Length: 82
Length: 82
Image (cartoon, rainbow over all chains, first blue to last red; front, side):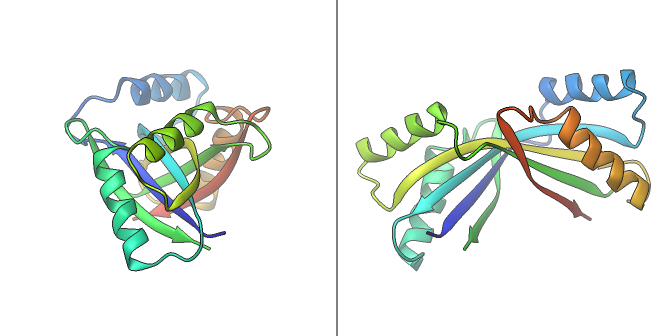
């Protein structure tokens, strides 16, 4: 069955404490290639049947209204994966 | 600066309680297009400089060792985003 992947990230202007913690762990591990780490959420919605325009529109609405908090997060991607 | 996106999801054979909770909310909201919801993590690693093979190899190693718990999670994607 097809899957719609919704990616949600914290707004770029906000501090990401989780990301900072992981970034700190990198430097303690001697990993220096990455200057910043940001952590968000990835949702996989399994679709019953085909991905019609209506289903995609519903996924977009849900992504904005339910899966993300528009005050602190952005929906950065909605992708259909067969 | 280029970014490497690492996607981590709970192993498919494991119960995903968070996903079930969101799935339950969907039915209360009258959303019926999606039979299942699974929730994972999305990491954005900002790369200092170019994404060389070494940097990509390091990202893969970190994804397995630090960013995911191989007992309960799978790294489902590592992608360079310019």
